[in-house]
Image 1 (tube, rainbow, N blue to C red):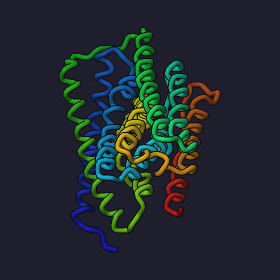
Image 2: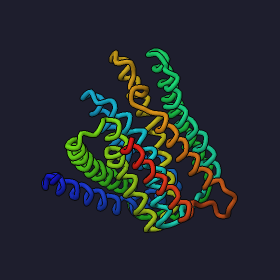
Image 3: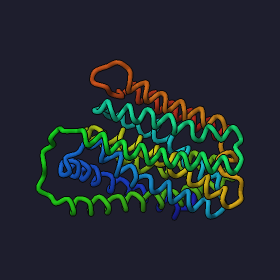
Length: 321
């Protein structure tokens, strides 16, 4: 089948916007971290992670509003799997990812457990009221973990050299480059979905693969650029923070919206045990690699290759199924 040339050009243009925005954003992350005297990890997990999760949010809202809840659920779950196996995998393959804060890793370990448990619990076939209650609990957990991140950073007394640029100008630049990431990702998502529809692929598979990869491209471009520049803390912070936003905040909001709309939820109808298994496996692998007794604590190139290979296997299985 011959692809539409306009869609192909639009895809490449979106990718170009993403790459340029990511390149500039990495430099501003470091400058803003120094200016505010906080670590790059916290800047990435609390700010950039939220910014890079906006494509997942907007794509999911658009999907649910248009009646395609399968794309929304697949997008959010698939993005988390892609973030760990694809984004961290490729980033670590380029340059080993060093972990700086033991306290943050302990917090992220607990948060990641709930990130897996939340969608898995719907396999118990919850009714509408139970689904809403569980989803509201997930949102409360998201707020708790977010506040805990901030509290951990307050204990950080390490002095970081300041820079001359004003905080206001740095924030404006970051907003501008995040907007570039969002624009580029939307161009890619729209063109990818249109191309996928020509092959009559199911909502779930589109969400788990093409849309998930498309909405994960901001994380991918930022983390790969950070790895190339050897900026420590950005990749792990961005991915773990983004995953928490995707599942505990956004997926729970999608589930509440669907139940209130009288459609008996979205998660149970559009998720399979294999998705939960890969979500749990990817989360388990990254923390095994992080917690494995080695100094300094890093995810090395060999471990990055393992994560990336698992992602290739996952994509093969969902298309084969």
